[in-house]
Structure formats: structure tokens, C-alpha cells
Image (spheres, rainbow, N blue to C red):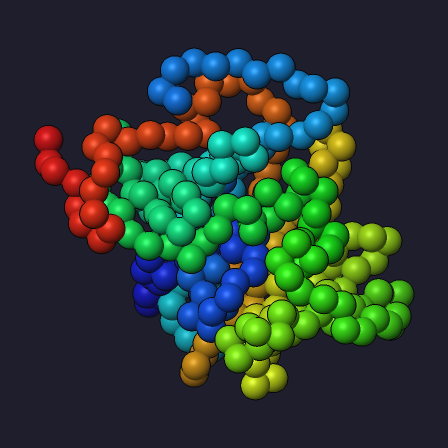
Length: 260
């Protein structure tokens, strides 16, 4: 019988692209209360909505997980919203280093999160930075580049002051599209491999609609697939769906909200 992976374990693995800690790399792993319509300036993409499926499986084990829902992200608001439909209906709101969990319009939990919206697949795709993985903006510097079997492979080194905590990153690209990323521990071990597949161009945004992760944990390997479909760019709907302010606010980190 397959035993489900806890939502909290899948949660951190969702959407994350890069990180500064081993714990995150191993996986706590690239979406107004008032109605507001925003004009589209030219062809600039600033907002994305997509149906999302996340499947996880421990290789050689009996743990598996499935999450279904809809993701919302607006670069101007900077909150990554995931409306979970299965296995339990709730909303996850990621704001910088904090995650809110909302059920029935009520905030039930706040806790620290390592998932950074600006490091997500959605943010980098909307800003046309996915090809370089946003590494230059993160302080990484290119240390090598070569071609192999039609791929351009580049190696990136973290800032000198952070090399005890951050390992190097390798990118593989084809025709200026990011194909794979490999994350290394400072001691050289591979922590994670991420593969970007089935690119689609929607309203001048090139987005991989399938992201496959191989996460190397202490004594096991987790295989995860994230799929996006029915993608909409610059949807003209109220900001509420991209902000999702809860009813109760200003709770200490790690505490549940008052009950109704």
C-alpha cells in the first residue's frame, strides 16, 4: 500500500528553483481586497495563472504524493498563490520567507518558508530570465562553459563569501532554452537535478510546462514532476486572486489563528 508523503514535505519542494541552504535543496523546494483592473502595457507579461499537478515518488520506496490545484502569480504583487484542490482544499500563500495556510477564508497557520516567489519558474519566465536561471542577479559568476552533444553547459560559482554554505550550479541549455540544472553541495555532492521540458510560448512568454526534479536526500531519492496546463498570461481579474489576504492577520510565526 502506497503511503502518502506529507503535504508539508511536498510544500517546500513546490516551485523552488534555487536556494542558499542544504535543507532547502534537499527539499523545502522555481504563484486586494478590492477589485482592480490593470491595463496591459504593450506585450509586457506581468501575471500568470495555470492549473498545476505535482506528483512525487520516493525511488525504490512506497511513499508517494499528489497535489492538484491552480497557481497564481503577479510580479507586481510578489505573492505566489497556490489554491490546492486535492488532497485537501486550502490556499498556500508564499510571501518572501513566510507561508500562510488558509482554509475557508480563515488563516489557520503561519510559518517560515524557504520558498522565494522571485526564484520561482513563474517569476523567471515572466521576466524572461529563466534561460540564465537568474544566477547573475543572485551573485553567482560563470566559471566555465563548454558544448557537448548540442548542449551549451555552463558552470557557475557562488560568491566567495558564501562558498562554505553554497555549492556551484551547472546549467545545460539548447537554443537558448534552459534544459537542466544541477545543484551541488559545497563538498561536491549532487543535491538535486532539475529538468525543464515541453516548452510553450504564450503571449511572448516561454514557459516549461513540465518540470522534473530528482532530489537526493540522505538515504533516498525523490522523483517529482510538476505539470502546468491551461496557462493564462495577463488575466484581467481582480487582484484578490493574486493577493489572497486572509481574514486574520498579524499572527506570530508558527502560531495558529483564532478560531471563528
